[in-house]
Amino acid sequence: MLKRATKILVLLGAERYFSYDVSPRGRPRLRFSLNQDEIERCSRKDGVFVLRTNVLDLPPEEVVAAYKSLGSIERAFRALKSFVRIRPVYHRKDLRIRAHVFICVLAYLLEKTLEHWMKKNGIARTWPDVLSELETLRWSYIEVGKKKIGKPDRPKPEQIPILEALRIAGEFGRMEVSDRP
Image (cartoon, rainbow, N blue to C red; front, top):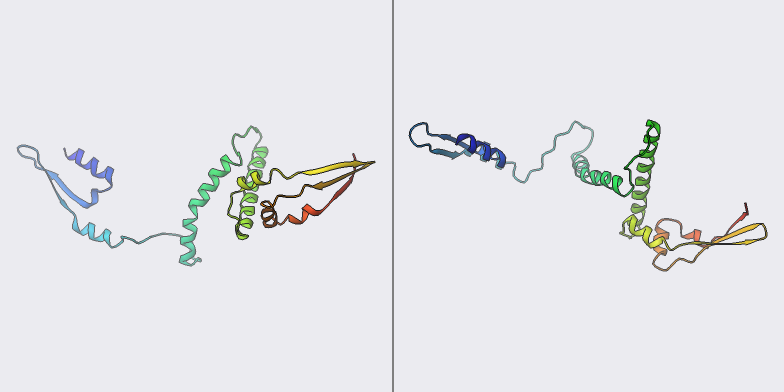
């Protein structure tokens, strides 16, 4: 009976708040009492956020901000594995695997940088949403003699703020002329 009581309290994380025993004589009886000293000691920490760090050159506010950003870093790695498709890696050589992961991390950094630029310009959309919005943009080409002339299609009104936030709106008034291969 004592083992079962201990197991239950341990599972609940409450074993330190109770003193308990089983009477050795006669019919087994479980006796328990609250450990008031431990309850009072723990209640002094109620509502307190405690962090321990070995980084001594940061102010406490930055330590807390860094700790709280861990969740976003973990989400970033989950996104890196899914959205950027870091897996599966079909490479066999170590250098190619490293290059693959480097490119995936670089792509994720680019994605987050572009989202940051858009957020700074008042556009709160994820990169996949932006890609979906911009996927209708096309360049049209005509060939005149040995020259190939390209000009982008006119963006839709809802695409213009995105292009401005990405600092590429000016590209949509320009023409491209190149020699035909």
